[in-house]
Image 1: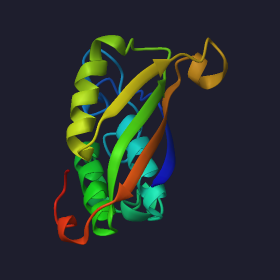
Image 2: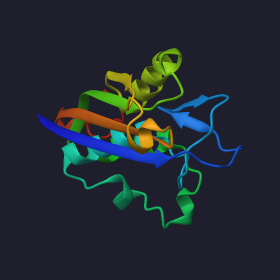
Image 3: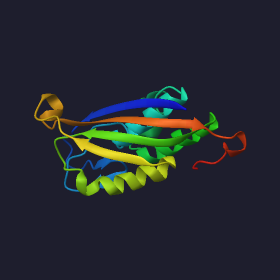
Image 4: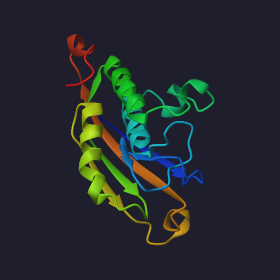
Length: 166
């Protein structure tokens, strides 16, 4: 078994047209986050946790923000590709846990949809929790959103490595 951790943080965008995407779910009525892709901090942190557990580097190495191919990219699609690369390395997700740090929006109404999207993407159970920074620092002033993630991987049989999910 291998464990990995991931972290991502993005500032809130000044662009009123920028969608807020968290855990693969578009949250209506909220300002989006600044980023090269869709800036989904939850999917990014989870991808980094998976890559770290597999010893495959980080998200920026695989999908650099200097590459125009990833402008506006769907982070769930990137996460799915990470799962494919992890499986090719002989590992698969057992489970993952994500903690989102945000003053707003309230995530409880969206958590179930986020769990469904992320679980579907990695092929293993994912939990999503939220907490606040209690007014402290940039996150506490609602200037950005962060996510911490941890993922547990196990070896997969060699004849199962071509599959993208369990």
